[in-house]
Length: 63
Image (cartoon, rainbow, N blue to C red; front, side, top):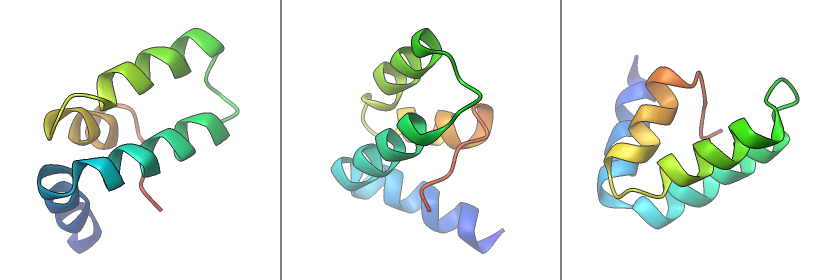
């Protein structure tokens, strides 16, 4: 639970770092197709809300 709160705070206030961490995680995920990876990268680009959506809905992580 603490990890989730830290990830949300990071996504809101330090979006460039959160975006890079999301992209690294997205590229390394084997179960996603190329189109899914591209769509998640586009979603995470949106400030604050994108990385949070990726964590909550995409079963992603920053680390």
